[in-house]
Image 1 (cartoon, rainbow, N blue to C red):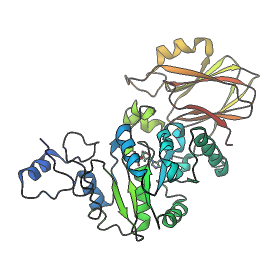
Image 2 (image 1 turned 90 degrees about the horizontal axis):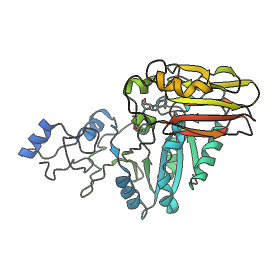
Image 3 (image 1 turned 180 degrees about the vertical axis):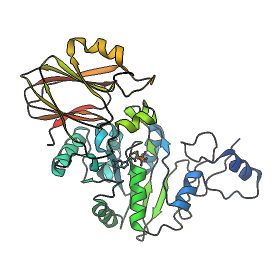
Image 4 (image 1 turned 90 degrees about the vertical axis):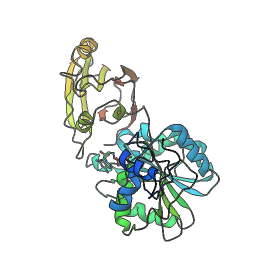
Length: 369
Ligand code: GDP
């Protein structure tokens, strides 16, 4: 039994069952601690943070997250929702709107390094603001950054420095948006992080938070990533995830299409050109994703037959939800979104239908380019 031995860093109950949950410690170390002499132990995550300044992601379900947000509602804090620009609709946290009423809230769009080189940052921000507003969220500010490439981080850090003079700053996000990478980069750029953990005990709480003390006496707080089943990532193995994750700025690939034709994005996405004059569709995806053109009238059958062999990823037997379609009638040049995969730019006046497994990550925006 794990009794009630807690990590002296984050306060999570120590456990050795699940490496992805809060308070994980390998069984051998946990048993030693339970047997007695040294009960002052850190969970693996805090240990790594302490010794390597590295934040390991921990996952949290929605209930835990709501409890965490509730605990914030009676204090003054800045909430930073880190989102993945390539899976924006799935990484914006809708339940935030119930809690940010009293608090300030900003959006940090990560992975901007993947946008085509000629995209306009102001257009990306406009789109983010519109989508957030549609969900009842009114961010005070929006930052576009690359946590991995450390791009635009100085602006964000200067902002955080200013607002954290009189309040704590909470980072929230769904898993895989790059929140850990961001916090690690911030720690890295801030320099000295000794004694990070010893000052951040949380007796009596099971919420696993990492508090980074600032000179102002306030904290940057990393909260666990929220799991969601609305991300392709939860259905793909790591090899396929790697294939669809772009590594470099996306380059356009143009396809001349007639209505009645379909493009498959591997076995993960599909767009039907339902009606309109012959025109070009511009595909922005990772190069590892095979794009296949076929006739719409054969597309259902073709998919059934070839998903997992010709149409890859997925490779093999991932339990993907069935493809779900949605029809769009863009009145301006628009990007059809395939969350986590990329987007396809189409001209005004066409009718198209896009498909994704379970409809996850579908959307449209005014073309960025
Ligand atoms: P977390 O679950 O939110 O903590 O996400 P991670 O920090 O573990 O990052 C998730 C994935 O996104 C990893 O594969 C990272 O390499 C990748 N990633 C993080 N930041 C960036 C970025 O700025 N640009 C790109 N291209 N990828 C990033």
